[in-house]
Image (cartoon, rainbow, N blue to C red; front, side, top):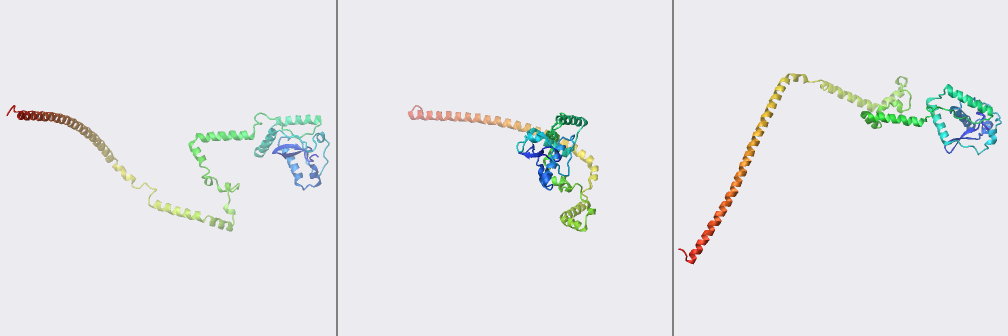
Length: 315
């Protein structure tokens, strides 16, 4: 069976990839309220957006008989040829490009499509929509573009310390940086003039803690302003003391020089005192050694004298 909308096989789904399968057009003919029939026509419209814009498709509101085509005998039910995964991914990416940027076709592309369709019509084949020939830049996938854009943004963020810190902490302050109407999904900020009295009362009741906190903060700011926190105070009176401050600086520098001289002199005195103490200590040690030697000699002489007296050599 062939689709009554596109005069070609139905665009179906299997295993996550697009493929061309036999169109169940009888669902659409027998019962137009069935969701399957509407899905068939919608998918035919998708095939037009995916590049077969040069081919004229007529979506009939009333049921019509499918055209005779050799494709019906070539691909029986259940034996539909699968589309290449790369082509399937390209079709999906291009459909996302159409949703984001719209259909963008130049005259050269339309001319090539017209020539290709004329050749197909001359051959008598009623095949499905083929992806038109694109230049190298137009064949660039949306995923690659997104990756390049992400790399450029990362390079810009990495080159700026402040921006990098901001992006690192953005999630923490997202509620403050993002307006409320953007968080709620509204395209424009709400207008308070168009709100009813009940809505205003509910809004004020919800914002009561914030309003009271803001009023308290304003009162504290007013008190600080009255105390002169924001003013310069008596700072201007100190300008007359600048000459005295300069004089004190000079005197302080002179005192520092005098203190350095005194420290140097005290250091010299301490070094001399240390030298003399060391010399006296050495002399005391030598004198002690001399006295010990003299005492030993006197003690030996006394012992010798006592021994001679005992032996009768002397009185």
